[in-house]
Image 1 (cartoon, helix red, strand yellow):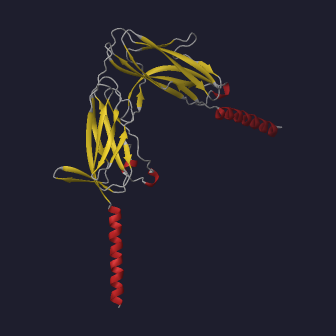
Image 2: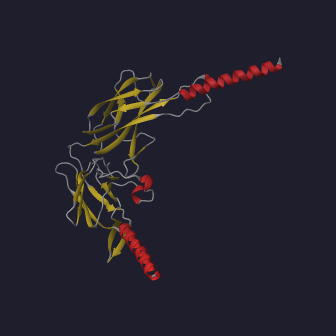
Image 3: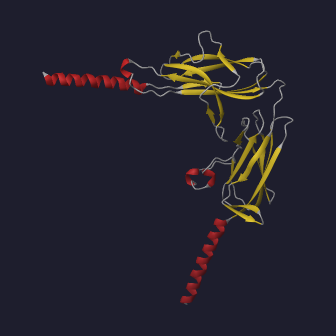
Length: 334
């Protein structure tokens, strides 16, 4: 009898563990939140209403919404969300049955509209304020799952707020870096000379700093000119540069580059603004002109590089040397 009791207990534990593990593994979260980005210019003492839609595409889930400030993390457009709320902007939900930081339930393929009200108090300091609306899942546990650990899933939508009484925006941009990443770099009488092989892709970096108190969005182009009259234009992709931050600005690429075969190439080791492909020979000049909307100041920068077919020339020299050696050896035999 004891052996049967033992087997029965083992069976019960196995059954409970299997059911519990199956439930945990089957849980999945897939959410969408729109609009993903809101930019607004607002006067002190005013408020606006933003209608968000959260959709649950996976299993039924309990969610909650909150708003936290963020700041730029690096010059690649990434952000760092702060742990505590700060700033003068006030947020609330206009939904009759929902509040911020209050849980709500969504079935599979169900959606919920979140009516987010933001209000700027009178006397609020002019400038930019950056926040993220975060919707995150809450763990649902049963008595058997209390000791299990659950990872939260979250999704966010950024809110860029410019507070101004007059409606004027401060635009103070500066190009801090406009340079190619060459295969070789030499100094000649104190001047840098960038040198490429003719078949090398040309990686270019453009970093713009926003020294003002309001976000800016650059517009413009990068122009390549060669010594034989070649000319190519590449449009800058408009990207927000938050106040008191820098950002690497990208341009429309002329061709894709496969880094799997060029892992040691410098363009594949760090983000770049533009990669120009082609066959280059001689001296080339790159320039950029950037504006930030109508009647805004224009900033510009330039750089240059030389290109020579080193690989082709080296291969040709080696071929000639081998050919000369074989010919000489053939005549010596005679």
